[in-house]
Image (tube, rainbow, N blue to C red; front, side):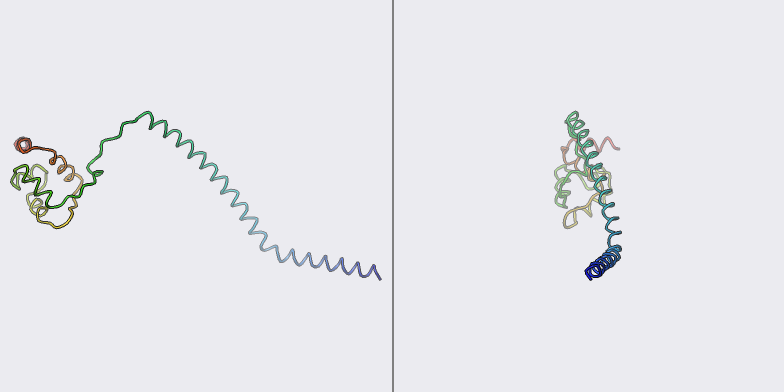
Length: 150
């Protein structure tokens, strides 16, 4: 009788294992694929971190070799230019709107519009650069530049 009971137990255990294996099998395959993908991503991250460290080392050497900073361009300058700035600069240089327009390389209509516009002005990079350069001039020098353009 005990052989029969032990055989039945063994068969029940075998069948239970078979059922568990068939139930777990659909989950196991994606899990294995996910673990492989994670391992691949970890390898790629490690390679990228090594490359980043190498680039940072080279960059630090280059920066230490060239300590001087490039000159800021007109587009780098953060200046809020309004109609008051345009009108004030033209008056400070004692120029007529047509002469001021010639100094900046724009039309006299531009000067009129920008002197009467409300709020901050948006200028093209070339106009902004010319405006900032004219901002550093004195009246006599501005008039000489205009005469040289004729």
